[in-house]
Structures are given as structure tokens and as C-alpha cells.
Length: 247
Image (cartoon, rainbow, N blue to C red; front, side, top):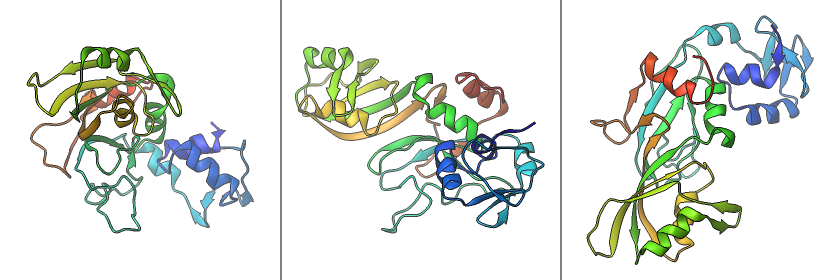
């Protein structure tokens, strides 16, 4: 059954819909020897080529969905290649005969912790989409004085340069009166550096940030930084169910 070309290619793990739309607009994809345009539909049985190379959609779409709970360490970048030669999270992932690993969202270079990797482009797209409001949990160490009034403001909502943002919950993890204090925060927005920017709006600095949860998936214990644990079928179904997707 035919479907929008970018959706079909995303399901097969060739990238996000947005990335693939750009590829289509650049004229890099041909369907049955015709240059594809946005809005075109295709079927896995069609001959689809990207940059002249035929895509094996049938094999990719038949492969089971896989998800990794990856433990990123600071200094790693969430990109396949880095012009500055920094280590990338994609190095050392399991090799596959078909498909490729896709990162669900991003963590900046100074943020460590849980990063989901999947072979399923549609699952990636939905987990990233703001309409599903997936809860992200972070452990954050803050430098500077923090009082109850500040915490209330952060939960009520703060105007940032790209709109209002807020924490859904804040739990004090360290009650000691010291210069650096630990908090556990949750946020439903996947906006760029939103946790750091929220705290910065109150005149304090994040000195360490680690993501410890993404939806129903927690940072795996017993895994070294740069390592991962693969989700089992039940865990994948639970994760997919949060975005109304059957897998």
C-alpha cells in the first residue's frame, strides 16, 4: 500500500521525516526512474534510489524494531561525524545487516546520561514530537542560592527567548546548605538546552546535568559511560504505546 515517500523512508530508518523532506526537495531521490517531489507516494515494491543507490526497503521494513538505552558521557557528540574530531555516540553501536541507528533527540556535548537509539524512524519521530509530551527526567547540580520562591517560578513557567517553559516537577536531592545542590527535575519539552536555560533564567548555573529517564525508560544501571543496554520486546511495546504506536 502506497504512502507518503518521506514517511515510508523514515519507517525504514533512512532518517527523520524532516531530513528526508530536505533530501526529496534537493532532487536526490528517484522513484521508478523519476525524480521525486514532496507529496509523492510510494510503495516498498517500487524502485527507489537515493543519490543513485537503490534502497532496500523490503528488508529494512521486515526487520524488527530495536531500541538501545545508551549511556552518553560528556564530550561525546550526538552526530555521526564531528569536524573537530570529538568522539561520537554512534561509534561502537551494534552493526546491522539492514537499517541504521537513529538518535531520539539530542543531548548537548556537556550533558551525560540516557540517550535512546532506535532503528525505527517513525518511533523516533513520534518520541520527539512535542504533541506527545514525553517526560524527560534529569539529575542536575546547581551552583548558586536556590529558595522556594525560585522553585515555584520554575514550575509556574518562565519566559525564555523561544517561549514559556517550565518544569513539571522539582525534587530536592541534597538538603545540605552548600554552594552546589542536586535536584531531580522533569520536563515535557524537548527544546534545545531547556533545563540549563530555565535555571539560568533565575541567575544560577548548572554545573552538571545528566538525563536519567525518557518516558518509561530509565538510565540503565551497571552500564559504563559509552555503553548501552538493548530493550526487550516488552519494553519496546511499552515505549511505543506512549506515542500510540504498535510495535
